[in-house]
Length: 147
Image (cartoon, rainbow, N blue to C red; front, side, top):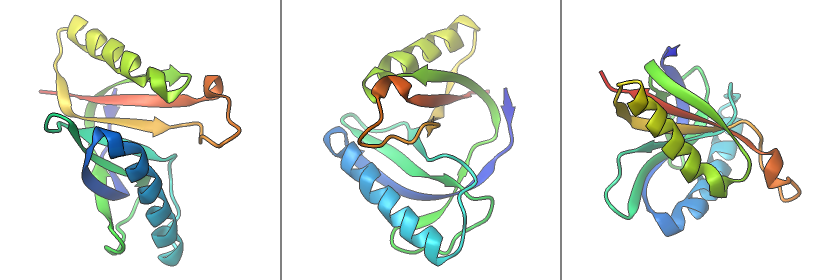
């Protein structure tokens, strides 16, 4: 599919795998505060974008599509979801199965004679809560296609 770039509000970081969950929690808390103060409503579900990362660390951005820039504050900055060709699949179930879904999406990209780009992101269609049954979660996986 072909996507247009979208302006986002994000928190960025290079994070050890063991700290990803904490990073997400802290980033979403900061995003909520800043977006409320600046009166910038999210235009999408939350997402986490992964760039190629070094070894045991992940270079990532956590945020929301906003459609307009935000003032840099409390670690929240303006970002962008990339436009262009993207392969997409919806993962049904808990976050522990995301790795297998990413692998399947990568295999599909290669089977089409394409090459995945450096940027991948997950859109958390179903917002998880303490009471959410993991089987009810829906996560959209997006992987840019390299030219």
